[in-house]
Length: 536
Image (cartoon, helix red, strand yellow):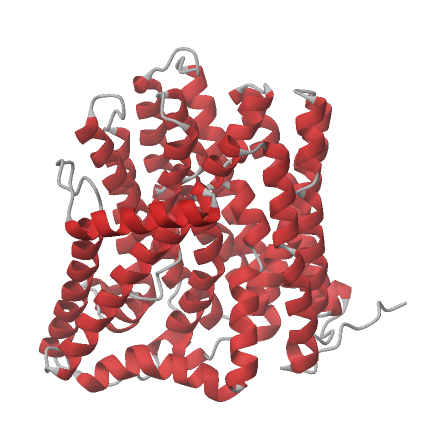
């Protein structure tokens, strides 16, 4: 493991690595991955806010992106199942990237054709579109991550990470600033909501995804992706898919039975009533409604996952799917990770992965709403937060990639964690100074520079933990774990702000980063990766 910490290249070699064909390809694939996420988070948040939804309802829509946090569940399917005709024609990785990009375009169009103010059923269609977008976008991430790791050796991973992040941020600014500019241009404001403006904005974003389709057609399939996967009959793949579908159905059923309204009907199930009674009891005991709601919401989620897992286990035992295929797909990648690192160190690394981005992600869910509440216009938010912020994030990503190669990943990982938590305190200052554009530039610039640096080091770190034999599944587990807890908490960010204040919320995100520093320090020692002194 010393290779992820020790300096390996000169400055000139590091700079030349950015011109590697795979690094250039990752720039465009990163763009394709970056477009969808803000269409679920900040752009959708502003759309729904202008449509009249409460802050708590707006931020809860961010849960549609939980697909990013649970993509490890269907990553083995993506790793195993061939795409009819396409896999044979263009290769396993490219085929799945292409299919996921088509699904993303379809989901964005569905959202564009849905007016959230047109009634309760329209809200359900909007939620369905957001969930489909989260699922298809997470699927695209699974395959792009596998493509990136399989297409180059570990020495180039930091550079591929930097160019991927650059493209990702460009995609985000197109979906963020671009969508806001279009909606603003066609006349939608907080005071005068205009659905047509947002419809045009989202249709334009669907059009932007065609760049990803063109990239997938042009690039070459990595040689590593054609390794041995075991020979199975077509019936084995179909049975595997059937078992997965049954597990998903179990998940949906539990979510339905523990929800008040089901699919838009006024049905209150006994399970829902029991959980509501438990929430009432927790509120009485803790005096904190937000904490109680978070605990019950998490319980609902994990109960549904447990049922889905039980169905999968029983189905495998009952012969619905090929047991060897299921074991190779789900069990072996996990067993390999714990075998390589040992139980104690493996759990420590998983804790680090799960908490590293918590400060940034939790704050990011409500950041656009915060800017608007401070008094900035959508045009100002787009030009500073998205355009200027993009440049600073790209600069931070390239800087993080260079420093990670030169001085080691763990050192830059620690630096990134410090900067990520400290820069959150700047938002308190921004709230106090009010809508001063110079202060917005300063806060956004420093915050995005540190985020880009941290992200480049973190992606390289995750890549180094992955075994090339289980690329898609192991990286999907890491990246899913990275966002799971932050997104669950982020869904309540609006509620936290409504019940306290923005200042208290930003201070909370700062405190969340403290345990991360301790985990990095311990992990560095456990891996025998000391944080070296800077070279003269």
